Picture (cartoon, chains in turn green, brown):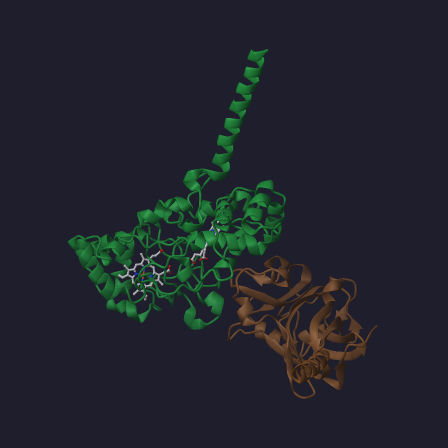
Length: 353
Length: 249
């Protein structure tokens, strides 16, 4: 009798322990646990005031975790195969490794190179053409684009409302039972908006906490003379639209900024991209035409081949020797921020990747 | 004792005065019933065929637009601004009854509102209610609201299925399609607590297709970005009038 009872106790406790372990893994794996401290907005030294301030989207650990879950969940796509993270891979600074043009649902190919995601709250507009005016509404594009996630916002909200885990997560995040597109989009924005990269070797060098090799130092000097006019420190963009001399791709017929403004002088201009973590976000340019930084430098150092509409300030660059090109590349690689790339806050808590 | 009496009578006067002033600033509910027309005929989706200026016949399959920030002006020239957003959808009867709460008593002579959404609310990020992007009145690729959607069919249209579609939005110059509408009443009109007040706002689809720009379905059957958008916006600028200001128990 006692033995049987003991067996029961034994089985029961095994069950309880597995349940506990399982639960804590799914829900609260301590490695992926987010606390209030993790979601504080800290403006890095020397950065300007951000455009997006979270004023109407109060940062909280639970909303951030909801956003993280959404970012990694293929549920948001039409056939549950593509998540935000399918295109925005953490190891590539949330760009898409080795894909020139984005790959979406059913292997369909988009018309632009996936942007890396970092320091988004310092951008006044999003996308290569600056068509998106607020970080919160940016995800509507990939969600509803037929060659990306091919879903409607309305149906996403429906799926979330009928998913037990999300009902729980929304409730935890907002303390009531309302699930709508506004909350879904704001949660995603907490996740992407906190992707702040400001701990590269360049940042440490600037703060006097690291040293540069001679090549890196020379690269920085050349960069400041020839590139920083558009790729302005510390974000490495001045948030303007320019023609950087690459010739338009006649097959893609991407008008760039002009598709948004309808103004002739904006034809073939694109938003100046920030260059942080540039080593990781290959291939380069809005159409991913350059596979590596060497090709980028070869382009900039060859004024004879610039597009006729090239921005006048490009002519400051002139010819660069092979040595100078490699020094600029050495400098660009100091912008890689491994603390950001391996920040556990941005990892997939379900490790599906 | 005298002092107390004085004080209490003073208090009494104050109390009476205060209760008067409360009466004076009392607020009413105001309804604006919207009726969509095509010329002199009430709009009927899908079933009724109309003719444009050029005699091209057409049916309407979808008609939606935003009315926002309704402002009332009283006879003293004083303005009463409301922070309101309405999405009028021909297919949804409830959407055609606009309710304004807390309108101060007074005599009003004109109304002003925006067809569209002010630039601030075009940039405000994710919003809910009538401004929720799930209503299908939001452009994601060039963010901002579609202020007006008119869709239908015309044999004259050369688009597949002989459809026409005018999706008009854009809050930035030179493609700004926000239009301020200012309507003056024939008779000024009192809002008071005795009767709930109803206005009838009439919107005429045929005005979207003419003056200043006569729309030829065979030449312009699709407007879905800034191309030709301001032409249509200048057309819809005068599609409204107030036909009747009335009262209802």
